[in-house]
Length: 259
Image: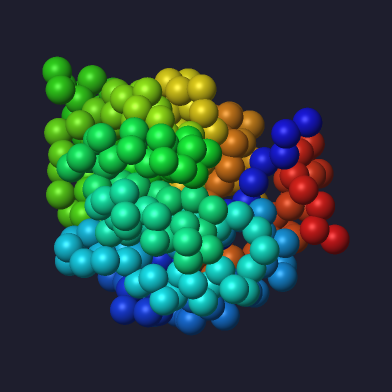
């Protein structure tokens, strides 16, 4: 049986892990290298690192932080933020990441997805999306619009249609982050996650809104997500990775033991 993955997310700004609500009011909470090591030792299945201001500031990702994190952990490690070219992706992979997560760069240049898949394999290329609930329209039939530049800029792209195009171009995994739910701890956006999971044949990772272990159970069972990103509930010590996995196991959700 394929186990569900729990993936802590390290949003990094100016070299520090930071957390906000709905992409606003961010507060620095720790050192990314120390937090990465902590999560690895606590049994996280994977880790994701986002340089959250690189795209908006039009600068390169902090490759030194990526290299330092990669030296501390021995689980799959995905990196995103400011990746605009094939060479950017290559640098991140050579620094120790197993996957590259492309978001704004893919919207601006969809061919980057195909280039990355051809050069490194689809398993290395993750299509990440920041999504808001909007009124349904001819151009946004699902009612979910893709945003870029750290959730600052609307694209006019329908989330479901963009997901399908990204996978057709070669993305091997999709991360869907609800801007509306991000940091609220009110639960994942189940309708959005299921919409994306039903649209493509690749693994879908839910992001934004985890507040307790029950929220992970809901997104795994009701929305059929393959993995879920956590941040606030574990960053602040409300729940540990072990707490979450024990709860899921008791709810008959398959997870990898860490105890």
